[in-house]
Picture (cartoon, rainbow, N blue to C red):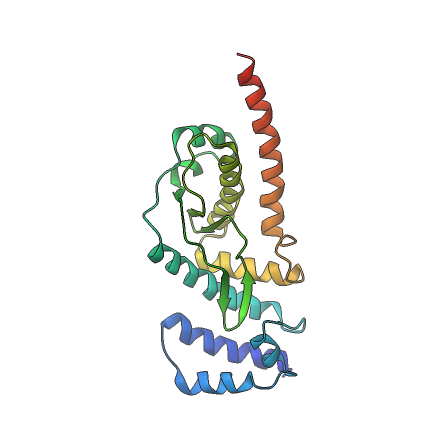
Length: 217
């Protein structure tokens, strides 16, 4: 068994404890001691540097836990969500159908800086919004009829659609982390983000044309 595959076993047991809310003290102590050796795979992970030889399924396992944990934290530390307003629905419905009736939005949200599980980390600290399931959290306050906020909602709705297609928080987190690994740990090169950014650009152009037509009346 390779060192990388042994690590998957360690992580699987460790993540199982985390997801069940257990302390698992003996195992946690053993895992922490492994962090003391910077030249080992585990030592590199503990220092925020996940080596290339760590397999995709380790990333997937970590993502399944990290995303669900972050979703619970976000729900607890933020206000109750609200529906999209009628103007937002009007412009977003042609692109997302009845998804606009199911999605919920929290404005003026306190966002998390990282998605973390067993030292697997994705930095999301510079984001203006985050999606957890069918709930969008936006850092800014609600701005009625604001085009920039509408475009941001369009980007985030792509992620809500991705979540619904995958079917659960666990599957979305798992797949997102796996694609992050495949993208050489690059946020913007992740296929989930590429799809969202491509739509964002197209939607912005479409909105500009719509506004031009409205201005002619």
